[in-house]
Length: 128
Image 1 (cartoon, rainbow, N blue to C red):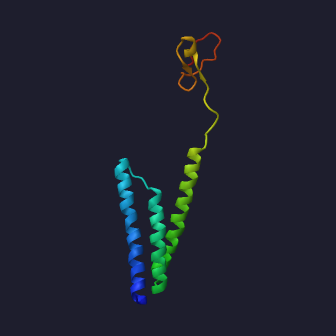
Image 2: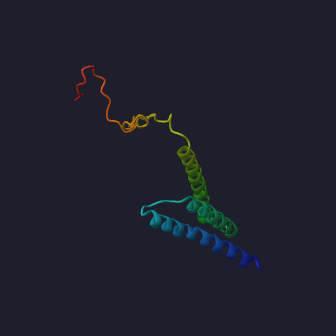
Image 3: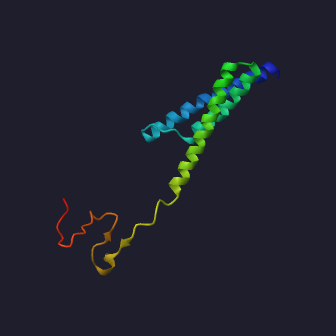
């Protein structure tokens, strides 16, 4: 394979990955019936962007070099933010909500999480 054919292949493969990210994003959004950007979008952006950046460096095209190198930082940062979000979602937010199982005594179950507002007045009158 000649050098010209190799770099042309690198450029087209990079463009293929870069274009595939839109297909992945579109399909994920259709599945959710809402606009979503899956992690695969950012991974395809990095792979495609890196291939296009290497092609641009070979071609000595400063416009594409600047555009692709700036994008690579954004794609990597978005993946880092997504990972942080995923870790926060897995971590417990606070102490568990206590549930009192009065049902064990034949009564209705009482949950502090679903109970109405607390009334601290001694006479039992409602707050306004």
